[in-house]
Structure formats: structure tokens, C-alpha cells
Image 1 (cartoon, rainbow, N blue to C red):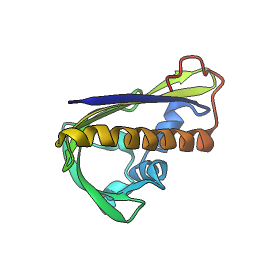
Image 2: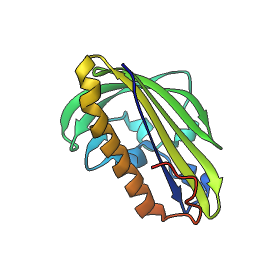
Image 3: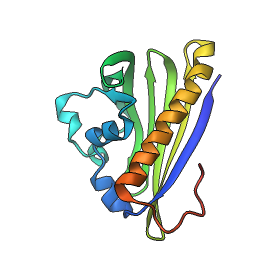
Image 4: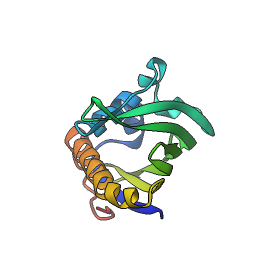
Length: 160
């Protein structure tokens, strides 16, 4: 059974500047202190907008609290658009599929960053158990982004 959730934030940064800061190291900064993902050396500082789409890029250990391996994620970007966002469709030991779409659209005073996640776990009950965990991690990611970039003036079309 698939599970879904969304999270959006209006940030006080232009979309082009937001993407200029998007690297795997920045993804890990968003994820900490809850999880850390391992990436091969050459991927850590490579801008996400330069990553190829349509193939598995690498395998990434997911480390709970930055040190305890809890999953192995097989990262694959289906689409990447430097102006609008990306669609990731990956899998892992725990999830048959993991679909994460991030859109970045202009708004008054910055941009709206929206994350949409849909996943299906390999074990039926695991998906239900992980839903509040994943939501909490994405809530934390968006708090991090709002602290880092500030809030944009346009807060009206935000989904929480």
C-alpha cells in the first residue's frame, strides 16, 4: 500500500540561488540530525542540477543519527529541471519504491519549495510505521530551510 505526504515552505531566496546551493552535502545538512546519507566522493559537491537523469546514480547507506545503518537507498533521478525541480524514483531495502518530487517556484520575495513523497514499503506494516518518521524528517528539513534562508513574504499558497 502506498503512503503519501507533502510539505511546502516559502523561502526568502530566489529559485536560481536556491539551486546554486543544492548539493548532496546540502541535502545531508537538511536531513541531520535524524539521518545522514552516504555518497561517493565525486557526488558530494556536484550540483544537483548537473546530475544525470534516467538511471541509477549510486547506492547510499542511510545512517540513523549519522552513524547507525538502517537502510540502503538506490538513488535514481527520473527528471531534473534546473528551473523547476526534480523527480526522484528510487528504491531501497525497506521500500519497493520511493518517489520524491521537489518543486521550486518563484513567489513574492523568494520561492516556494514543495516536497511530495510517495512510497511503498516491502513489508506491509513497515509503511505505516515509517509514515510519521518520514513526515517528521521532512518537517525538520523545512524548518532547516526556513532558518537558513528566512521566510518569503508570500505565505498564502503553502501546504503544511
